[in-house]
Amino acid sequence: MAQNIYDNPAFFAGYATLNRSTQGLEGAPEWPAVQALLPVLKNRNIVDLGCGYGWFSRYACQQGAASVLALDVSEKMLAKAVSLGDDPAIDWQRADLETLQLPLQQYDLAWSALALHYVEALPALLRNVFAALKPGGQFIFTAEHPIYTAPRHPGWKIDAQQQKNWPLSDYQREGERVTNWFADGVIKHHRTLGSWVTQLIDAGFIITALNEWGPTPQQIAQQPALAEERERPMLFIMAVTRPQV
Image (cartoon, rainbow, N blue to C red; front, side):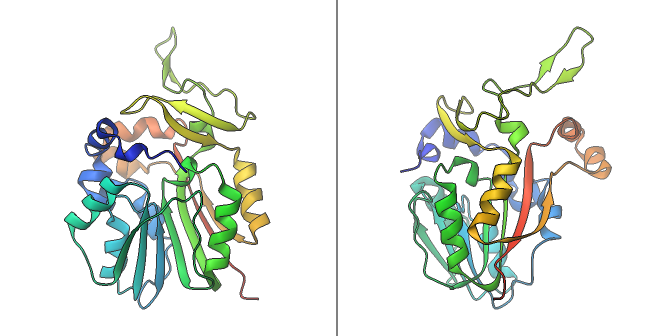
């Protein structure tokens, strides 16, 4: 079973302070770039992998989605999601992405936001998502960038010239990373960008977009704290498709 860190009270309380928690999709600076990749959601069947507060699930319903299966391993996250607004088209379910089994050819779109870097058994999950999509269906997700996940002791370093640098290390050494973020002992799984791509291809997907996201000048003007995100990618956005045949 995946580590259920979001049910840790300290972690959950810390996560609740983030802009993406308090402001929803508009509080996620990568959201405009994600929107540019999304297909029409009206009348579509969607699965949300690691739904968190349920912001995307509710957005999909607002866009006219026929159904949304919203999955998360955290009971606290699911309870919070429902409290923020339920919708009859959303089926909230507790599920572990490590062992998930979805129905075959059921969904037009699979979506996941900053959840897959917690999954150890990624190849199995990708095969399962591929099988669950209808031919021509899309899988769009965000995940922490390998440059961000690689260091065993992540964090900005200030050199003698007062320049801020991100310490890239252990990039080729894939596997578990244990960090302290809102709570001690948060487990993530580092993969090179090549491994992400290869595992998607091995699952049968066609890659249609890869965005190593960084803020626009306009975003930095509005939120100067985002400037450091231009120094290294914190996350990437991937769009892939199940072929029609």
